[in-house]
Image (cartoon, rainbow, N blue to C red; front, side):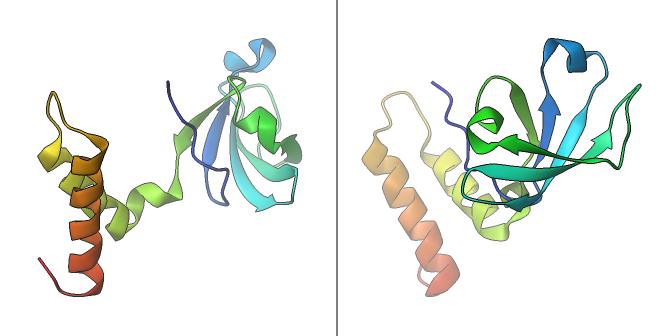
Length: 114
């Protein structure tokens, strides 16, 4: 089971609707309300790049869209956590192994503890 991250400003999505897939329509989140995201069309063969549109948060997290870029991917803390968890990744690794690795990485970033 794949868990989608929460919709956040700066994320880039590909529209997978049957009529948009061939157009390679890419939309970037520029704003978020309680139920919808405001998006700007960055790429659209046969469409209008630069146009603003809206989509429900539920729809963005459905199979109708694919997340291409997430701003968290460039966050140094994310990269540190990913590195720490990859060091414990193995057959039989438990959630506690990953949690300990993440906690050590967080502490080393925030408290100088290794």
